[in-house]
Amino acid sequence: MSWLYDERIVTALFLALIVATPAVAIAGGAVHHRLAHGLPRRTWVLWIVLALVGPLNYGFWRLYNLIEDHWGLDRVEPLLINFAFFIFLGVAIGLVLRFLLRPAPADSERPPRDTEKP
Image 1 (spheres, rainbow, N blue to C red):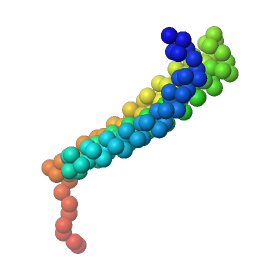
Image 2: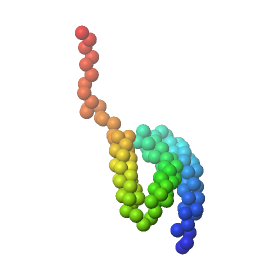
Image 3: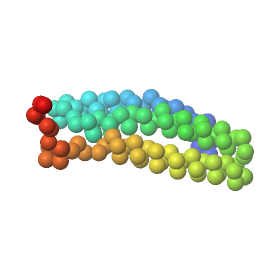
């Protein structure tokens, strides 16, 4: 059980995810594209998000460790800083994904184009 507490092992796992998640996303996206004979934009966005999870996770892990190493684990300041950072991050990622994954407006919802020329 000590492997859960060893920072080097967790860092090695996150370093492996830097390579694994983009590779899995590229392979999965290619297979999905081939089987579905083309993919909509929403699906490509999800495969790209999967590809970015590993590298972003490692970056956030390093940031978390920098904050904790500076102030220590027994203080309230790093807890509040990390709490605020991850709340902001969750809201920002949620808004970006909401924007990227919104459905395209149907033809009936689009305003009619003015075809008359003055």
